[in-house]
Length: 546
Image (cartoon, rainbow, N blue to C red; front, side):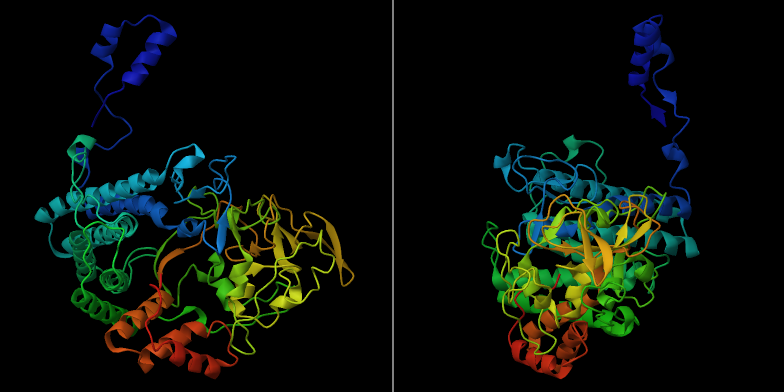
């Protein structure tokens, strides 16, 4: 592989002033690289193909592992500043994607210009990486046979599955986009490409997922790699999207004409794929879908199972199979760690920066375990101006407002006087700390024991997240080894329920699946929840189960 090293040449001329520009061209340019594998020496073996595929996984991982940033201005979540990347006086900048520079600024009036194009650009970077693997490994098939051929087809299948995932993301955000299925060596090759119609692209995605299903093993060959069940789940999701768009329309997309016939065909195909995943791959919900134990108000030594579904040391082996497709992270000292704790935690949990906050409306969505109904809405109160704020009925900072609620709330949120495991910036456990709204880094005595309150940069709404905060030491805020789930069995249960309900109305099979997911809320009053499911499931679910 020839490397043009003009930059090095110019440095030499400037530094020592003895080489002329002519001699530099004669003697230094176009040397054989001593640090890179020549193209003619690569793409020879299945190991080469797999090595290239791992690079593909590494890049595509960044496109999907922080989707919560797209909810950054919803009524449930607030994202502050630049997610550690950039701060502005305007604030509320949403970062999309885990890769550096993957900024998502939806409002061009903030002075930095709209940065949606960065995510768009990185998506096409992912497309080109998958095409690079697909194109080169396809050439290798000409001389391959036996087990080697099957291994190469598996590599192509994994790359095509990721390409389908990326294009589904592109069209769900931008509608018609250019479709590229070849290796791009220069922008001039694609700069004039027209947008491809949505229906054409979604059919190409389905083709990719179908090829993946036909050539992937039933069980992934290694942790974090794709399987047949993943291909079926993503194909079903593509059909579900297509059915939903044809049923509900897409008025923002010029020229899109919905079709009820196409919607029904797509819903049926989606339901078939999801049912196949559910019944034929021996998958189960994490810890059998049991809710576990709530523990005690204010304590964190016992937490519901839902909390442990998102903690690396309890879910990384994925022995239940709930995580049908996920991206791995390497953990400490690998340079491949995830920074979820940095996003969700406060300074007392790994010196984290809490780039995302829940609004109090999130807590309103967690129902009573006594009645099964929604509780009275929480009332935001300020303890600095309202002396009874911590004791008033339904106050958002009264701990009693959260008693006997959905187990998943305890696993997800920190409210007033909730404990969390303190971790310093070296990853060492420091003991429990207590979150108290408007009490930043104070001493507090609870039942005769002195604790530190959480230290944080900002506490605007009276909540932090507990979800994704590790409750054990050994890793800093950026060194997590979480298997980030992109497709879970719980997703498939709910998407099957939606798709099948569109085709044949509510069935007991679908109702039972929904109730298996809802069982995580609490094991009490499940019969009441089943009755509610039948009542509410008599009409289609309101949105895709993503």
